[in-house]
Image 1 (cartoon, rainbow, N blue to C red):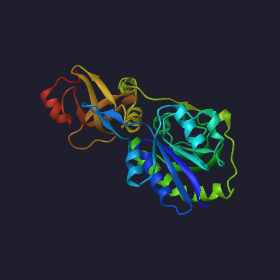
Image 2: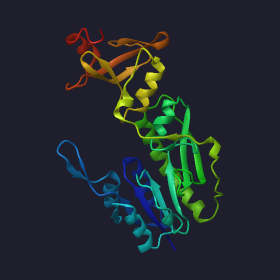
Image 3: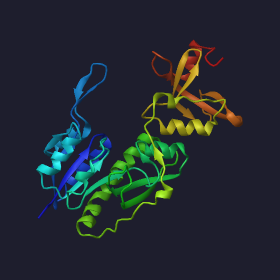
Image 4: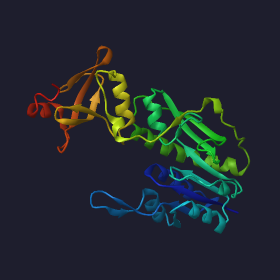
Length: 294
């Protein structure tokens, strides 16, 4: 008999795993939990999330969830063997976590117990970590504190958050078939997390993207650039307003502007954007604003 899975997710990084699960012969996706369509862009157009779009293309039943009561109803109204959660921004009530026979499993993009919370990939990059990874954890009431069911370490050096998200999303999808087989045949021994080694991370704000060349080394700014590429990006305060740095490097090439940073280090700006303007090569911006960095 096929095992019944209820999948929860929102962004594009959740889609490869949903697709992978839907292709398996020995499981059935009995529902896909998503948030209601949200208004997007300047025109505030109601837009479905990527997981909803993918679920409909796969002919999977979609359930829109407005609140925690909606989560409770899902498990009360359906016979669910396993819940799988990948990037679904809602805390699950403790009362539902033990209802499926195999519980609810969350996929978290860090090597737990490091970087519990909302920004594990960005925080690992900012810390200068050479590796991070993917953790399948048995969900519990406390945030990202569940027993580790599967963990894999992966390289993140000199990679942007967007690149890591894409790589981790597809690697998770590759791990899914083996993981499901093992959990359904009781071949996984849950490993409690070491609480003494936990670290926490939170969401970033717009102000977190500001860089301070007189206080920060070029390397520190480079890590910010990699970590915050999706949101909020990085910017430098100038006499023309905040200059968004859209392409930078730690080594010089043609048409860069050299920016002096702390501890006698240098950052090289290739492309940038002034408020209300289009993104441009930095030399083109400087031709129209020669005193930009004065």
